[in-house]
Image (tube, rainbow, N blue to C red; front, side, top):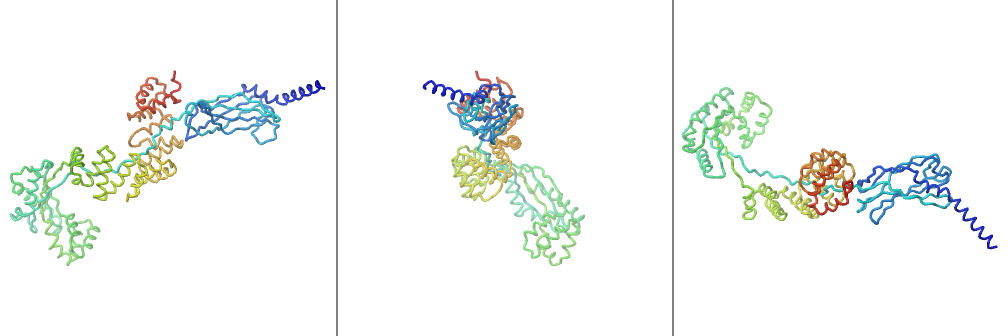
Length: 548
């Protein structure tokens, strides 16, 4: 009886092996299956490893009643991450998986596995098992790709945020003036005019220019005019005669002062001066006069229309026209403003003498973040400077205080593209890429376009990023990276002008991709000054082919 039992057990065991035979056969024949992966070196894009795996099953391989499970697995160090399992079935399996005929077929699948730190040194393998009538056989694991390339993660995510500029002038052009007035239809210079207050002020100004080491007299002018009444031809001649008489009086005006030879100009009818004096006057109907000037450009028509307004014209004859029968004496001066050294010294010694533009300018000269904040606060408190308020936010952001920067930007009154870009940079620093992209898109500034390139690199839109960063101001880092990611290596090399370690690292990648080992090693040696980059280089797949 025991022998019968043993025979029955062996029979069932043999039946089990027979029932699993198709699955085992597929496992044993797995080496005949052709597997390729694109890319062969894995690449991380937007935080994801994507790969297209193509599997070609030969004729006679896939049993009609077998289900095949295939699981992609990323293996790195002592860790592994499984992707979504793929299912295939033979022609006679009544299920809903992808069918592979016994005559053979090729199947391409997109593998998606989220990146995790440490996957720089990894490989992708396929693990499978064949199932036949509830029993299964494991297929040998198949390594299909190495990787992963994380070059895009070298993107600088600080964001480009320029300070608002200042209007500080190292040399200020200015003029000092005096004038003499003529009587109607006369070009005679009256002695009372040469001793009048206007000429005395002009002479005092010439003396002050000579005594002030910051001021330099760069030229002098005499400009003569006629009032716009009496006809254009008459007034042009009269203006020329006044220019000549004023030139003859020049030596009396300047005396022994070194004023040089003036440039003499005759203007003729002084319509500009007329318009200026009328606009500043208390004449009741001055708006009507100004409207006539805007309607007509012909001097004769202007004069006729104004004379037709008889009451108004009488006021003009008494208040405005006499002031236009004149010759102006002009000294052109260059004032040498505070030097950078003087400005920085005044910040410590006498900051209150600096105006808004000087404060904004000197803040751009100092490197100490705390000193920048002090100067911008001075400009805000004394001048209610909106530019200083904006720059204060930039200064806090540069020092890494995102919360304080956002608080200061919220106080800025000018809701312009620069502020919109700043709001985007705040969102970028906080990892809110969608909000950052929205802000950069609305800002429309050069800096915002460059910052949008950062978002596009992070999202894997490398070609678009390369366009946005092509002319980016400031450091070239991200534009070099974008060109590398789009394999425009010559453009990347041309743009890599900065000398910081991170750009040197990018230059090493360019050289590695071009096969220039000497240039690669030279740039890596410079980049290794940064300990983080030195550690990265040991694992970077970009240099794997050159490691011993």
